[in-house]
Image 1 (cartoon, rainbow, N blue to C red):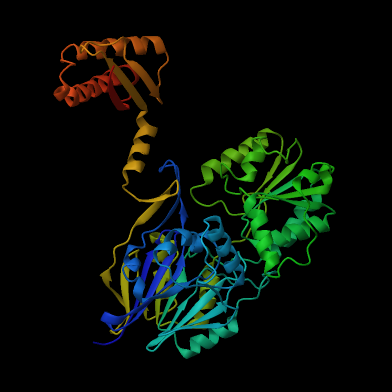
Image 2 (cartoon, rainbow, N blue to C red):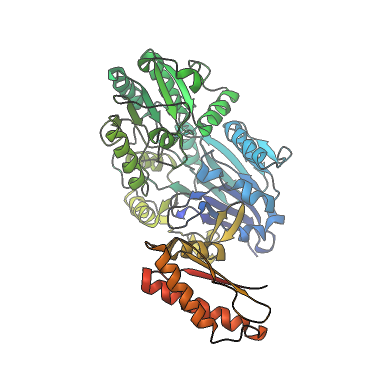
Length: 552
């Protein structure tokens, strides 16, 4: 049988986040695989108690003996966040550039896993040989240090996996996008381009970090009191911009939030941020006058435990806000976060603070390509086929339409689990389906989407909980009143509710012989029904009910 070249996304196709892509080459019985990126997404309020979600890796775990390694394009959580959850089931080599490698090491240290013999650092713009693949790292520009596109060379043709990127003419930190190399790759021939779709609806160019810097200097120059800037910690260029603005406006800077300190240290370790002013400790910053300090903090999306939220609620031990201070949200309002962010903005405005965001000032540029950026990439690379990823279905369908405008001969619309045969064949197409899905991090355990723990927690959040303990004497008679405990029920008159429920339970138990242990399950089931019915009549809620029979 002929060798095949396959592509299969397990995450990130049909959603923004949770990126995980597989490539395979070889005869069907002896194919070798690589994983490109291994990310998470963040849960919303519809899944109580869950913070992180990541792709189900079962398909590639079954092939781990033929897995050559995990190749990481950059260090955003939606590209590396699942590695500590998935890697222990794979135990394969991990390949990353220096900054990404530092952050990966920190993740494994927190989990007390020694990764040193598996983590391989790849120098920028170098080539990694994983036979039958030769993988070249190409410098891109994005909203984090060391973003890489990957030229994946195989015996039957080249694939360009763009990773996350934009065309930033002035990235300020890190290298420029390697347009020269991308053009050369285009001339060599690109069988398929796997491409970022995030901003496909946005016209024009994305814009440069330099333009944000100029705008922020102007904004901060007019502010007279304390300034708090909140942004994504991973955006080191934005971090350097805020350091620059602090120096230009004669202020000290203080970093607030664990992630901000972690990224700052990682950037310094890799040789970045060498020429910025030294940040001061937030405890020391408290002693400075308001016009002499800028705080750079986490929590730009209104995260409940983020530094910004704690500052706004006056629960942060080191940062206190006052009327007349200003808060700059130097980040995009991510769809889905509007409600909690506007609540936070309103809270700050009520306290007399000035709130500056992308809605009223130029304080942010995206890290993803707008249509003009995409057009440039297509002109450079001239792919024979485009496979949009890193987008919801609406983004990916629009990206297919855009590719047609750009006269790309072939395009493949994929969703998670689709196996695309890039070679052989008249043209690339989806020819099979891999099992795919999501795993939820519940506490420190990974569970499936339909896990009992998640169903129960959803039910508890909707209906409340009622616990009934019935004490039975040795002669089978009822010993005193049942013990009732309830949580999450809208009970106003506790005594009335309890008295009525006790009466209903007593009436029910009289219809059973409590001495008959064989009837115990029937008694419990009947009492559960009676309690739910009573609660529904009194409160409108049918709580999750637990009944204990205790013989004394």
